[in-house]
Image 1 (cartoon, rainbow over the protein chains, first blue to last red):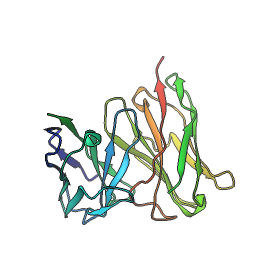
Image 2 (image 1 turned 45 degrees about the vertical axis):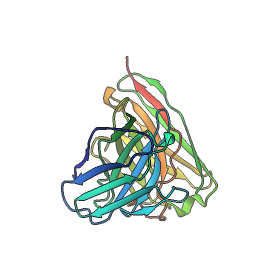
Image 3 (image 1 turned 135 degrees about the vertical axis):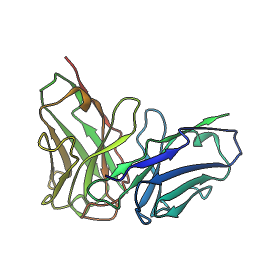
Image 4 (image 1 turned 90 degrees about the horizontal axis):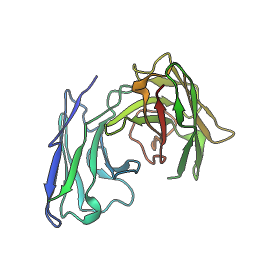
Length: 108
Length: 122
């Protein structure tokens, strides 16, 4: 099983600031990585797939980068609606799909 | 993109059974693989099971293999998860999710349903 490790567990950021979230895979997943946003009481929402391709309707302040074992999600200027928990997911090792433990982005 | 609506969750005793349903709309259902993903209270996401568009191929996480069965009725645009021999550790919100790339599963998920809560407790 490929283990996905996200850091930090919690990120405190002020509105308007830049946030960078990290996701590390225990072995290479090439670019087979997705990012999701989840708000309390809601289902996850797809942000990024293929490590760097924004999903339909996702604003350009969200960007993904990386390949192999190291990935990042950057939110260029945090808006109030961006405070949420973010998960990465690898889909390189089907059917053993795995998610990271999540990073909670909270208001500083 | 479409919409997904789960139902069938509830309280069940350990060792009991439950069947979840996921009604799909807004897309050609049999053209897409589907999966179930769960989230225990206050925890992260865990992929549970996936099925191809035709229903001919099914896949399970080791944690549910032999206890859960995924199926679909393409004539009713509905996905199912039959859960038997339930354990306390199966307590979670269960989401159905669409594999947006096509009929063979192996990818990311978009969209997700709103989820249905399964509680296994005596």
